[in-house]
Length: 333
Image 1 (cartoon, rainbow, N blue to C red):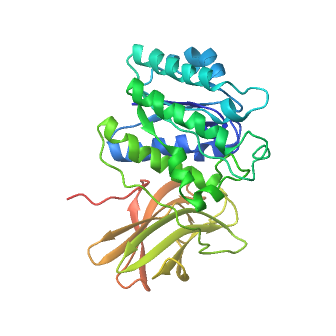
Image 2: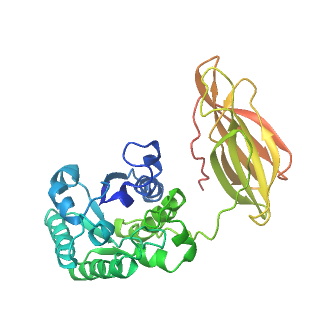
């Protein structure tokens, strides 16, 4: 299945089109969530452009949307249409452009999802000059109106963010959702459109606050979390760099918490001679299992090793699982 996400810098997301962080944008995360829940590979093409408006989108819609032959089109505009000093459009043109985008896609048999733009906050430099929240709200209402009239699915991001002061605080410059927001936004979109695609209802994640669980001068990455035995467990790789092919650099840290607020490190797991990477947790019976795909600098191969615990304190292993990468272990049956 292929989805095209058409929009402005909020769709292009954190860091811009040439940034490595684009793989962590909400459209990229959306593809991973849907692929995991729909039972098939879902490709989300990011056709966001910085500073874009609905007028400019219509000029590139053949190249950036229809040539991809998508099954679904997600459209998110409004911030530049409403607030840009140089590219801003009248409310009437904005509404007509949205309606035309829906009609052009529908004519080609492409289902359409319309997303309202996120709100802006006082951090936005033009907030107090008449190009702020009050003006934007009129454009938000236009999205809702077009969705209702054209039969498009509405995903109301404005409503999601406006009613939550914490979400609003994540607008890093008062207009763009920050890096933390990308996963929240992706989850919200996935929960809204999964049934439209024949998938299950995906639980919506509500972000209440950020808690720092660990801080040191090491390179910590590849995090997983689960709940087992009435407690929460976080695991991640500890190393000096992202990847050192000539050195067994990585170890696996395990943290435990009863309340998600206070955390303590209970173990650091090592596979001697191997770079331990990408740990994944799996609760099975009365045990908590941890799988880590490891890299051998000497043999130049990947193999997966397992550890397990029955009490959360003492870990047994490593157990060699063979020349495979257990990327996301699951229980079947």
